[in-house]
Amino acid sequence: MIQFNKLDKLKQKLDAFRPLPPEIVSNLHEDLVLRWTYHSNAIEGNTLTLKETKVALEGITIGGKTMQEHFEVINHREAIFFVEDLVRKNETLSEWHITSIHQLILKNIDDRNAGTYRKTNVIISGADHIPPDAVQVQSEMQRFVNWYQTGAKSLHPVERAARVHADFVKIHPFVDGNGRTSRLLMNLELMKSGFPPVILPVEKRLEYYEALDTAHTKNNYDPFLTLVSDIVESGFRPYWHALGVNP
Image 1 (cartoon, rainbow, N blue to C red):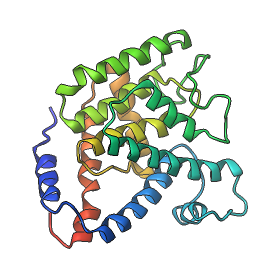
Image 2: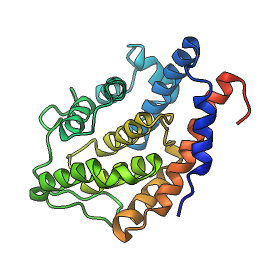
Image 3: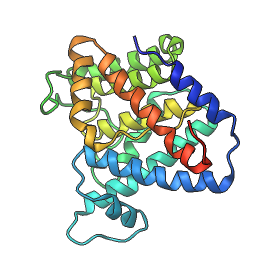
């Protein structure tokens, strides 16, 4: 069983500094949007480097890179802004929110499938888990949202965020963009509970995929919870640096 006491203490320490100075909030936010966008897209195969991602976010086209890769960067930023707006409004997660996030992810890339549940069966490359048949996606998503609105409330916020990610991606409701959407949903949950959003580094991609597959095929969430707990802890570090304090 994962112990969340350490993360709760880190959050309490950060809460003591809130509200943070506006210049720190602005600086941290710009860095977060860049690194979150870079790593989440890189996990899915986007070849833009961190610096190229920064330039693309400034509206400059990178030579030798596809338009799709540029759209993936711009779209992800828009999806982050949408998620942050949901946090501000403290809205309860719904299927509409999920499809709206996905629609932003695939905007100008695959408009036909953007925000629409898949109508074909899929396999996840390299994974043992096989997502449910397309005809089951609608009912599985309804069950997922019902669980979120009932049973999930009793979980620690970090566990709830991890389960939202893992259980959503287990259904794999969209043809493409499930990974990016799931990481946005995880951070939506963390931010609503006052935790900093996390960045799942592309360097941990293999560990990430293996932990998800273990959760999906063996119903053992511990490796994934451990991974998420570690990156949640890392999510506090930029704040300590900006504030000049030792955790």
